[in-house]
Length: 195
Image 1 (cartoon, rainbow, N blue to C red):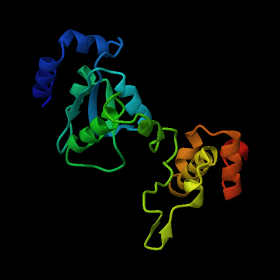
Image 2: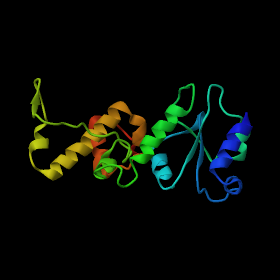
Image 3: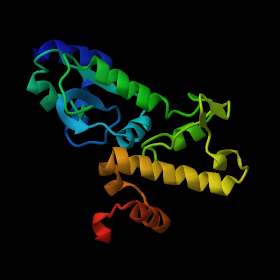
Image 4: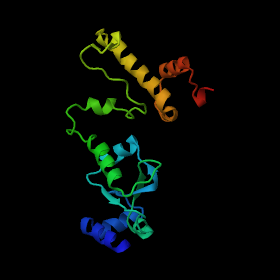
């Protein structure tokens, strides 16, 4: 039913604000419906949501939410993947996690946010910890070399390689330098605009 959802929403948000947002006014508080029919949630959308002070998420259950809720109040419909869950609670938790970690002060080191997978459009490079050798496997020599420029390049190349091997679809929209393109070409990958 639409009525209980809209009543709850109007207890949280001013009905005039809801009406303004639906009348193509500026979005002040996104009202997000979690649905398999929504646009796919990405790191870019997480960054977009982080700019708002509040977000309202509507979690459907089983057969979804009455279409009139979308028509009257929803500003965005989001999916977390090409599969169906029994409700929107798990997608809501994933969105809260992705958005919250972007808020300054939530993580101890904001560099972690910048270096995370998908932040640059690529998957993250492999990580290694101590000890340098564990069960016959060693940390790559370059990582203990002390040469920060070479370490940075190695990390970038590993991110490119990992993305190419596991999620080549991401490369089409990643921000790539000429050096990145040359490295990918050396792996045998050809970008469409290079072909």
